Amino acid sequence: MHSYRVAVIGAGYVGLTTAACLASLGHRVTCGEVDAAKVERLRRADVRILEPGLPELVAEGLAAGRLDFVVGAAAATADAEVVFLCVPTPMGEGGTADLTAVEAVLTEVRDHLPAGCVLVNKSTVPVGTAERTAALLGRDDVAVVSNPEFLREGSGVRDFLNPDRIVVGSRSRAAAERVSALYAGLGAPTVLTDAASAEMVKYAANCFLAMKLSYVNSLAELCERLGADIGDVTEGMGRDNRIGPSFLDPGPGWGGSCLPKDTNALMRVAEAAGFDFGILRSVIAANDRQADRVADKVAEAVGGSVAGVRIGLLGLTFKAGTNDLRDSPALAVAGVLHARGADLVGYDPGLLALDQPEAHDLLAAAGILTLVDDVLDVAKDAAALVVLTEWPEFRGLDWHRVADALAGRVVVDGRNHLDPDALAKAGIAWRGLGHRHAQQSLTAPA
Ligand code: UGA
Image (cartoon, rainbow, N blue to C red; front, side):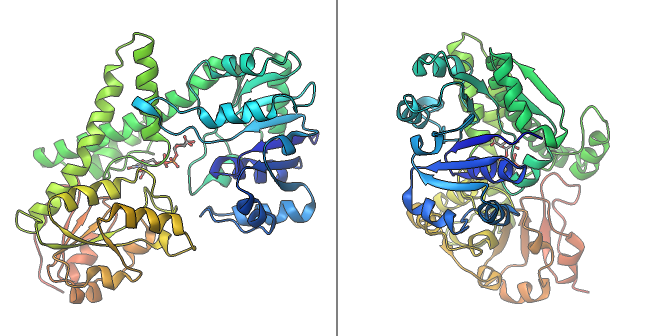
């Protein structure tokens, strides 16, 4: 496979994973990052993102001389054949994607990009951005390509190296082919299209996933009312190949840095295009209700009101396997419980794993709970425990010791993650989402 000289702009989650993985495929990658302290750390392979395999790949790339980190975008692009833009596109005013970082990088690199290089947008950007990028660049000798990423936090390296598909869009066929050639070693099906369609694929995929989840969360509520079991229902429907078994686990809502931002952005794009995207509006509205729904379950479990009641929260990140608190449904539930007067204590294994002042600052700023670093401290004197993130270690807890620490003997399982029988043996009642046994009463300790 041909080895390309690649620049990656941005050493955030997507940029760092892209840089390290492309280096592992044999390309020579320079990653440009605006934060000088981060560059310094990365040159020592000090990775602060909780992502399996990423620190190792960064270390390998550095040692092999195929990966380097520099401060700034222009410095990274000096002799690049392909330049990836991997900068954040957060939710801006009114839900639209904020392109400030993308535009700042374009201004910085415009006069530095080598003639004949290809500029690739990996950041999630509104449909039409590739065309705008080309106009902003004003360089006929640089082709613009859209190559959306489909990486999940917590399995980004695995997703990058084992993609379901590669999507590459451009008005220049030669540029699109050069970008697909970077991934040649992966043997993934490749969709070559125009830039607008590639940009649309990203929104279409994330919004479809959100739709699946809002659907299953609504279905869980209905199952409860009708005495059906969501676990059996999703197994029954998920075995239909047209539906598939993944993304069918009910939870406290979908969150993270992507799904909420992208559903809102596509809503705004549709509005601007004069299209009433009613389905997507309902998908978002159903998710907005989910935190209240879980909080109602908690209130019910402790006798009707959480005011002045101590509640222990298990899991605070937006899903298991990450230390990311951005748009975390767990924090949305915590916010509702706090507003109703609950006294909250929280524990999350992802927040113990690394030194991460940002996460602790975010929690302190929210001021809604006390963070503890021992699972038994979260149970201590709590009227109920609430599972909000599906960390595997929660399943293996010593429920007898937890029961001894608890004041009340009930766990609200907002992820349907625990084994109700293991809890029952310790004398703890389990209440899940959408289960026939959601209201399972306390059984005598074995
Ligand atoms: C998501 C997409 O899955 C990636 O394909 C995409 O590349 C990425 O956004 C992005 O745009 O960069 P991620 O944000 O890491 O990835 O999170 P997901 O694994 O998709 O989970 C999103 C939310 O749905 C989480 O809150 C998770 O707990 C929830 N979820 C997921 C459920 O409640 N149930 C499920 O069955 C699956």
